[in-house]
Image 1 (cartoon, rainbow, N blue to C red):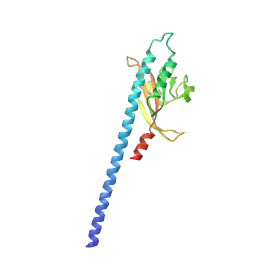
Image 2 (cartoon, helix red, strand yellow; image 1 turned 180 degrees about the vertical axis):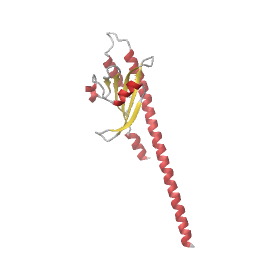
Image 3 (cartoon, rainbow, N blue to C red; image 1 turned 60 degrees about the vertical axis):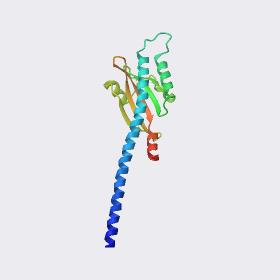
Image 4 (cartoon, one colour; image 1 turned 45 degrees about the horizontal axis):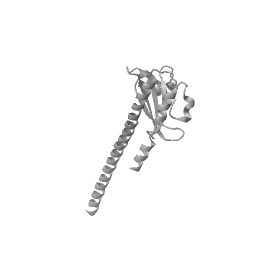
Length: 178
């Protein structure tokens, strides 16, 4: 009978251990989802403001005293760098020519004036809706959130797109700490 009671207690303890593991996995999955969602909401709200500013600049009637469109866009994008450390790069693509008219990454200035080859940007320009995905940076091995968002004029006609790369590795590092 002693062996039976020990066996019963051992099975009971193992069942409790398995239940705790299942609860832990569920908790971690929910926490990871919430952290990703909060990160994406934060970046998206910042980009919504940026997209509005860029849209206003792109539809503005230019006078001789105004800076060129590319200069104005780069001014807005450089100002972006002071506001959000998670954003690695923001590019602005004009709809008709599909060329990059500004980038926040100074090492990618050579892209300005060239046509974009990015599929997400082209899809956003055609469909007029935002698209996003998590990608792995080949050079650094870090997880990056890539978001493309349409730029619209006052009549909601798509006039361009914003291409954003945000470093999500901090979210996953925070998860590992917890």
